Amino acid sequence: MQVLFNEIRVFASRLSGWRSVLPHLALLAAFGFMTPSLKGIDFLDTQVLGAYACLGILFAGPATAQAFPAGAPSTFGQAKARIFVAVLYGEIVSMVLLFAGVATVFARNRGSYVPEPDWETLSRCALFGLAASGMLASLAALVTVRFSRPAAIWCLRLTFFGLLLLYFYRGQRLADVGITAAIACLVVAGLFIEILRRSYR
Image (tube, rainbow, N blue to C red; front, side, top):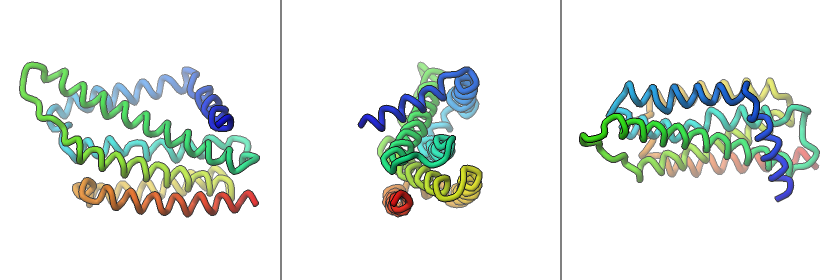
């Protein structure tokens, strides 16, 4: 646990400066307030909320790659802790944007009927987002340790592009395959972590 707490403290210290705080505030303003305000009730569509619930995918992988500034950590435990912290960070950002967006829609339509989000479907999407974040964070850690941080960033960019195409053409099925896709992501993440573990032998 001490290793995990140390990694959390190091990660938090990197986020404490204005160069990090300002982009996060801009992100919150754009996706937590402006976008929901422009979309109105349509923001509560399951496909939109499902995409928001998966936004952690965009943050966990790059955060993991950035967590190795001086190369590979000295132990596999440190590597696992950095993966966990990056996934936690991505999920926190995702949930803050999601609930800020929902709250914005309800606040702007106060006094009129606002349909309640489909929380069950949203939870399935969020589960997939969490598993996919773990998979990409594990991939980023593995490629960074075995090769380099730039190589990890390129792998993530290619993966993001593939996921974007998949969402564009099959995004409406996200809620239907959420559990199955989450299990698949967890299996792949486990494979990446096992290969990463062997790198420390």
